[in-house]
Each structure stands twice: as structure tokens, then as C-alpha cells.
Image (tube, rainbow, N blue to C red; front, side, top):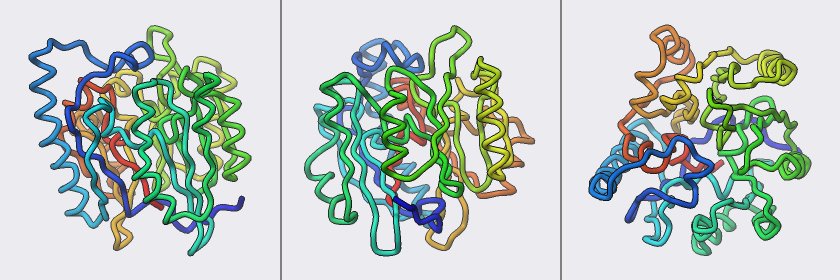
Length: 308
């Protein structure tokens, strides 16, 4: 299905306020970013997460982003990471597509709530539901698994236990984006659990950790595609990935002003000249998200679901 390329960044987002946020033992095996904390520290950070999430919401609203807010279920430890179970795509001014995705962790699947799915269905005429692939042990965790260049119509997917290449190819055929797959690992040789921790694209900038792509063939393919589509390349190191520099999201204000959203930890992780590169393309919005980074191993991009 042909996509509408006019909306290259979302100006409306879904946020899910944390309720009983905590570390998720079912995701720890595939997510090396999650930190081991004491029960006392976990309880403290759960409270901090509520205030940090509120500041993220206030920051977005203050810069002209429309925010739809709801609360997570107490039974879903990763509920605020709402970008993993759905994505939205505009196919025209009055038409669009909602995609639902299969999640690896069994205790994350209730995040795909009936009330939220019904709300989304009202906005999009077509639904492409991949969630049933969970029963066959195949997973594709939405814009965690897929980093999308909306301007060029290309999606990038780093293969991992949460990103099945066959499902990514099926998604590509159905939704109408070209697909570039590769393998990316940390310094220990462990695949990054999501593509969006080592890569982001928006407003003509592509932040990517090329050194994490060990295959020179795959590395060249990714670099050439990004440059060929007119992106300015902002190369990240593995150390910067560990600081969540890859977990940024390009949005736009209702006025059309381009924005880059990230955590304060990520902002500190960028070199001054890299911040300057981003600021030439959009305003940088950053806020402290350390509770989510410690307990959940995810940051700004993971907390924001785009509503195109």
C-alpha cells in the first residue's frame, strides 16, 4: 500500500503513565540495558518514574506536541513503553493503517489493551494484525524493531530475538516500505534487543552505530542507503549507545517546528559538535528519564507512541 510521505514526523503521540512501574524479569535475558537494583531502590525508582513521565509529557505539550494520555495497568510492568505493540501509518489525508505486533515477553502482551486498540481503530480504516504470530514464537516489536525513515519510505531492522526477519519482510510488503536488515551487537557480541537503541532517523539526520554492525557488507549497505536517501550521517559509538544516544525520536510541533526528543543522559552522551548537527535540523528536547533507563532498559523513544 502506498504511503503518504507528507507527514514525516508525528505531531500527536500516545503516552502511558506508569502505574507500579518495575523491572521486568521476563525481558532481562534479551535486554542488557536493564540494571540490577535492590528491592528498595526499585520501589524508589517506581515513584521517580511517575514524576519523570509527567515532566516528559509537560515538555512535549510545551513545545506544541498533542499528547493523548492514559494510565498503565498495574499488571503490566513495561506498560509505559507503548511504542512496541502498535504503529500507525497515513495512506492519505483521510485514510490510514494501524499495525499490531507480536511481543516476546508473555507478561507484556496485555499492554495491547482492548480499550486502546479500539480507540486506535476509530482513527484508521485498515488494521494489519501480526500479534497472533506470538503463538508460533515469532516476534516483531513495532518501532522498537523497526526504525523507519518516513521521508524515504525505508525501514531498518537489526535482527534479534525480538525481531524476526521474515516478519519484518512481511510487514514491509504489507505496509509499503523498503526493508534493510542487518545484525548489530554490543562490545560483548550480544545483539541489541531493539534497533531503536542503536539508531534513529528524522529531519534528514540518521544517528547510527555503524561500528556495531560487524559485517562490512551489511555496514556498507546501511551507510549507503542512509546517505543515498539524503540523510546526514551522525555516527554513534557503542559507548554512546550505552548512554541511550540512539534512543531518540524525531517529532514535530503542530506548527511544523522539527523536534528531537531524548533523555538528559543521551543529551550528555552526545559530543558538542553532534548536538550542533542536530540543532541545525531541529530543537532538542531532553529530560531526565533515569528511572525508565535503569529499571526498563529503555528511554525516550520507547515511551512515545506516534499517532500519524
